Length: 81
Length: 411
Image (cartoon, rainbow over all chains, first blue to last red; front, side, top):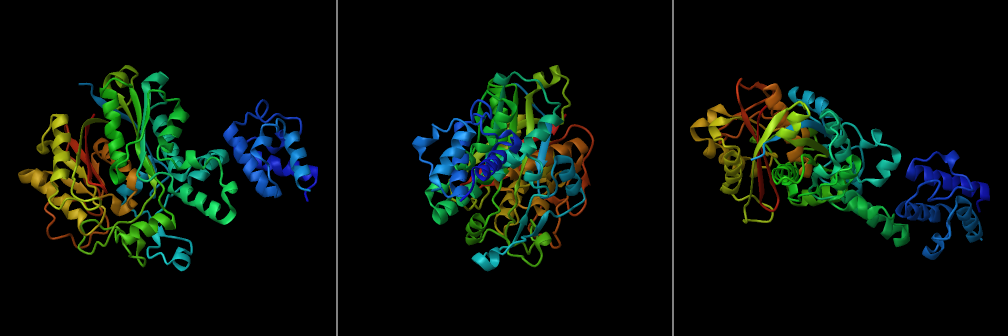
């Protein structure tokens, strides 16, 4: 199981790979849409890659609740159990 | 009628990552065909283990997110379009007067097949959401429109190996219809994957000269045994003459006429009499207000297949009649391989540069020309073209009986 720090680091790598945003910019309080300018298709790509990386399932209904990077880290952390 | 000019060119090909490098390599008679560095023969029993592979990987030129969002076919198109646009002086065009017409013969087939691999091996939930915008055959023209903010229309003519040439012909029509002042036009293809390679090999369309990749594409040679798969893109910037002159653009050549016909003969084989090919050339010349007597150079479709090469050669010879001696014929696929939907576009770039530099590029690998060949073939080294006003034809034909001829004339 990955720690919250490891989840954040892994998520930052995925976001960087998809969008070109520096991993250092991907911090807990950042909003995917407002701060990182990630569109819905990119968000779905990030979700798909995160599911595989952390071996979790992120239901479609849940994705709209993941406003910030922190929301995603918390959800993945909980879903790992 | 509005005249249309070419003001910018771009390419990424097996001969080079841009148009000047590609052209220099072509004039030097270089082959861009190499062996595959993989195990597709052992793994899949692939009988053809070579192709015209890009000299510069688009992933080395584009940003990582761009590479991840575009199929290799769109990547090549964007690389070539950026070069062509800069070459045209990056004109400040009203977005509503700028269109794109960029085709691929088969679309994002690598993306399609990789997506299916993912679904089969790891489940549908692992398929990436960007797959559809990457695999759709209009993706290259759409990405080019996004890159340059072109809002007058983003088009993609699909006619197999004539797609690139047809897209350039459509570009001319868009300008003449008054729907745009500038069109980014061309074609692209990324078919080097064991799936399409196996498909074309199954048709016995591909050369199997695995022991001599660089010598495998030999249009008009008596020992030709099929075409060589190639990848890459060619782009031209088309403008109305009025618009180009008003902004002081450098003009490479005129796109003076286009001819498009269909054989209605067979889904893959060209009509043996070459009548549709000849008509395409006649229409293009008529539209340009010229006759075959004005033509100094033809960049042939000539893919190095046993049947196809001579059908075209006979069509040219019958049209040229007593003028056959005044035309020099080049088959540049001998060096690049066959870029399918990119072929007509890359060869348009060659034709434009041939007129500009007054040099017809060579055909390599012809050691024993087909005895039936009655047109003057440029072999091994470039041939100088005469001074004065010249016309040149670029032929492209596609599976399905699509025949496209483009007539370019000197600026």
